[in-house]
Length: 290
Image (cartoon, rainbow, N blue to C red; front, side, top):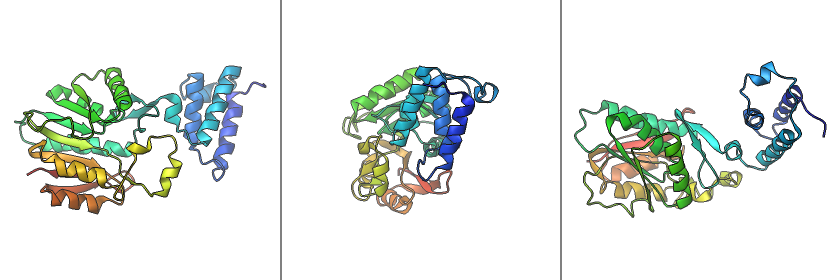
């Protein structure tokens, strides 16, 4: 195998990017994969273009590009994904955290900062935690204010990943519970939760885009009733677990804002609003329990 230099590989990456119709891979995926393989910083690609990959590095790089072309996301190859201000381990048992989900974090923190002196128990519940990115990011931001976070997921494999991520990010004010939504939680617990958040499955089971998401767990992506079944369940049961005046915040699909707002209103929530993501699409709906 002829050794390739960084300069030659950068040329290949440019060619692959120009052939987007054939290989629609983001160029940064390939570049970041190269940096991961050679364990170098981005600056290295500029200052050391003459560096020759070893045979093992070249084989690993080529194999990763093939997998990405077959539908494996970069994060599953590197085993990690940055989210908020932290870094998270991910694998095939968890969704890969998306930047748009940071909108949910922002809205929760903004809501807390707008509240008068907290008189409740400062408890937050994350339903369907997956990698733990939402729960851990919020626990990290709120630990100085003595908030306690409970993160729930039905998948034991996902919970193992989330627990690892809590340790990785040195977050201790969090508890993990294996449960189907609220099933293993008691309405008799006091105090109840001041905030409930969730990024549940919300893609319509018939959505053609699901065929492209071959690597991520479908159970964490799609739901019946045009993608609204899990959201409906979460909203309907939330009042049993939420303090009076507490916040419910749910991420949903770009075309579900009106339907989700109506679910909130039908179940007695006030101050209902929908916030758009960085692309200008409806993404997070919030409401306060009455």
